[in-house]
Length: 176
Image (cartoon, rainbow, N blue to C red; front, side, top):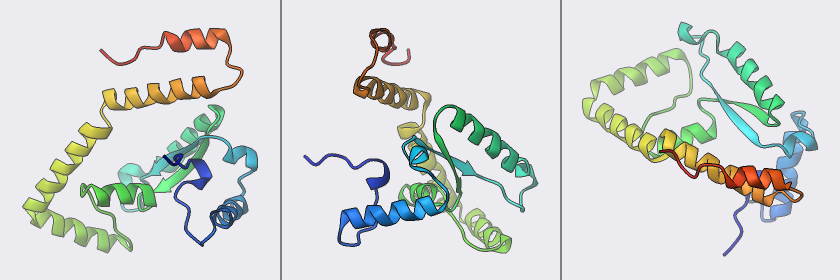
């Protein structure tokens, strides 16, 4: 069984040579100002919901900066993602639980009007979003994934102290 690709090797555009594809990705990312040290950190995506169209989200840029500082202090690499960025758009599209749009506010307004006038589609999107939440984002699911990740990181860390191993052994295996 092939080893799962992780980090920078994951989701590479195929140019015929994986190493060349990795080189291009690394060059483009470094051109954005990221160092090798930064790229070795866990990348934490932050969804940017700011919109000049929605006054309720006017403080999002300040919140994102505060979250970025916290992620950096915790040893991660914060990356703000727009709602139309690949991961979120792909999730919405693949699970048919929302939609994305490109363009101006009138494009969004038109899409919302169409959605509101199609009750069946609205109900289907809602049901799909609920199913996705239950499958991937309940506290129990997220907690179990986090525990598995932490256990993997602790066991994979060479030089892990006996006290760290003891703490890991006493971590709860699930939520009651």
